[in-house]
Length: 386
Image (cartoon, rainbow, N blue to C red; front, top):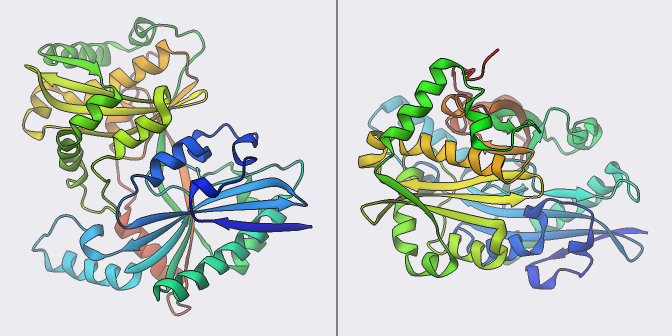
């Protein structure tokens, strides 16, 4: 017999949860607990377990997201066409959404099942029932209707795309979103110098210029005590970058980084950037098996350009990945051009999206996604020697 259970908190999860053979840290209870303790105010989490007899064979992380215009659009412009676009988008997406996955990080970090004990079709069928139950529960408990359902972030070669009957039955439309920038690290690279030596002349010169401009900065790893004491300053630096995005669907809590460090310990690393002993920037990394995941960062906007702080952070991340033996680095889906200039490559990703209002057509949904997450035109850079 195959069945599912829905859990409201990490503390309720069965002991079998972490024993599943997934190596994805984003599905492990340490990460989920840190996230649960510091979710943005408009996001809450649910957890689905799929069982065969009494054995846990599949899991899913589902986030309920409350979408409101002020959260989505941080910048207010006077352009009347843009204002009309914002009003249209807010009418369609305003309300509650269920996201299968982690809205706060690029990549497929929402589902796992043991394909030796359950088929993908059977697993998805149970997940479908769980989402139906959650939709009814949220309506009954909060009087909120789920307007959008999202299955988030799948690479083109993901096996999930083969389950076309499931997506068709649930009116889930496949939509391409911006690529995930991934840096694959050759096995022969052991040091930062191995990496830099493969740059062509133009990009080696660019690397040296960036490093020279950052001579007056120094970097230091921040421990849990520092993160707790200085959560306000760290949040302000994060907010500077976050608010610069024209479209966003959440804002982190002030203690988010502290909570992740508290629960993930050495698998969550925070590095501060200091200028004359003042914290002027930071970046974060999550150690996810053989993959290094870049996470949120922040900086003082007034000195960012002068010291090429962002570019130097990207180089530091690459060096950390190489020197610590990672196979690849996930740089996520923003600032694609500058990330390609340090060696990351674009990998196409798709989401599946359903609007519960049957009058909202596939075309309208695609327009909304393109408006909120436009496929940007950018030039891919090729920094390495041929």
